[in-house]
Each structure stands twice: as C-alpha cells, then as structure tokens.
Length: 390
Image (cartoon, rainbow, N blue to C red; front, side):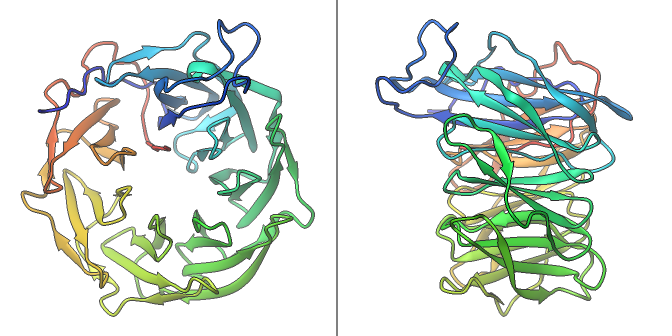
C-alpha cells in the first residue's frame, strides 16, 4: 500500500530540517520541564521536525520551529514554537550546522554570523527548551557541527579553518571548550564527518594546498583531535563539499562540487583512507547537494533540475538507478536528504521556499507525493539546508 506523506511544511528563511525519532524511554527519566503535562517519556511518541529559520537576505535573528510528524506525515506545530537561536544567521555567508545527541536529549545550532552555538533540550513529545546559558561563543562563522557518537563532545568547524571541541554535560547539555581547542586543520574547511565508532574524524577541504580530505584521531577521554593523515584530491574540482560515512564504518564517500564522487575504504584500525580503484567517478555536472541513504548503498545527487540516483556496489562502483534522474522543472533544490527509514527523500526548494517530499520506491527511484509541497502558508524567505537526524 502506498504510504501517505501529507502535510509537508513550508519554511521561513534558512531552513534546516531534522527528522528526529524519540524511542522508548524508562519511567522516571525526565525529558521535559515542569510545565509539561507529563515529563516522563514512556512510549514512542512520533517523529519531530526542527526547522532553523533565517532572513531571506543579509544577516538577522535565527529561530527554530518544532513540529510533530505523525505516521501519515501530518505536521502539527508544538507548543512554544518557534524559539530564538539567540544569535544572527545568514543564508549566504556560510553554512548552518545542526546536530542532535545520540540519546535525542539535546540539540545544537550554529549562529554563523554572530559566531555562537545555541543549545536546546528536547523535552517530552519533542518540545524544545533553551539551555541555561543557551549560546556559547565560538570562533569566526561556525559551520559544520557534529556530535560525537558517545554524546560527550561537540565538534564545530569554523571559517578560521579550525575545529573547536566542546564537552557536553550529560545532565544539562552545557558546553565547555576542551583543553587545546581550537585545533587547526587544513585550509578551506567545508565539512566534518565522524566515524561511527567515534575514533576518527574527517575533514573536507575545497581549495588550497590541503585540497582533499584529512583524517584525525579523537581522544576518547578529552575529545582532542590529532592529525593522522591526508588524502590529496588535487586535480579534482572543489572536493570536500559533502562527506558521508557508511553506517558500518567501512567506507567514506566524498562529493566533488562539480562532477566527481570519491569513495574510499576506511582502515578500521588506523582510520586511514584508501581510494577505491574507480575513484573518482564522474557522474553529473554541478553537484549542489548529495544524500546517502541510511543503509549506505544508495547515493542521490542534485544537479538542477534533476535528482540522480546511484547504487553503490561492494567494490565501490556507482550504477545509475532505474527510472532516474527525476526531473523537477521549476524548482531549484538547495539540499536533499533521505529519511531515517529510507522511505522518503526530502528536498528544499529556493524557488518556492517549500519542502518537497519524494517516496523512495523499491528500486530506489523517486515519486513525488501527490500532496507535495503544501501550497498554502508559503512564507517569505529562502530555505537552503535540510538535515535528517534519526
């Protein structure tokens, strides 16, 4: 039976969308504040969408809106939504970073033009609460944000080509910069990825002498990072825009902004990267966004006006999926992401300022849902980023 996906939400300004599932909790575990009807999460309560919003032009106050997404895709805005991020955002100067701790208790957002990170507690039924001392100052223009798989550290990449590392208080969510932070990395830092076992961190660099990928080991006690090696991708065209690591930790996938896909095997003992023989694989022209599915065996790429899809073989070879590309004339999708169950692909359009939802069919091809996108309540602003976090 075809699944319904009604209620796709239109977004104000800069949009980062997180699909968050809160799973079974234990009685007596506090996930909310005292003004909730029930602060104990005792059952599956649904999926939640957290939308980061910013101005259509220039720099201005950021905010986060919260929605519950039921099984049919209906969205209901939660009580006390939206909340301010406590800082300034720009949709043009650099990317916005956002991530959630593995226990789905805390969420962090980068205020890229006021150089700070905002923190929120995720309470009962997905309701957000600003953390005490909600924003923490960072170096210039924080971009990528990644939470360590242990939930103990937050890694923030900034425009100074540094990684700032903060410890996360497991009870309050408060951030404290660790000794030695910030850590200098290669120039033109664009992306961060952390290995699922938490031992290795990878950075993507688009230009300069460090063009390519860098690998770092992570001290599990302190969060400090130490350079362990580089994989040069010089001669490519602007690599490092997006970095993905497969769920089993065996492979890293890096997109070249223009046309190439680099796939590398990861040494599970050292974290060293070895490019597969077919790398790079030139696929499409200007790759403005990419999405790796949760299973790690399908890669979707966007080049206006098409969404391309590829299967990834055991040897790291890309093969075009059937009935692809999917053409969506009239829209320019800035960011695409698959959901946590590999049932849907979400795309934000800077043409109509809305989120489009595509069903992922059994063969990996896409079919836009009949009610996607919602045409009413289309606010002013430019959505530019979409992130799904399980």
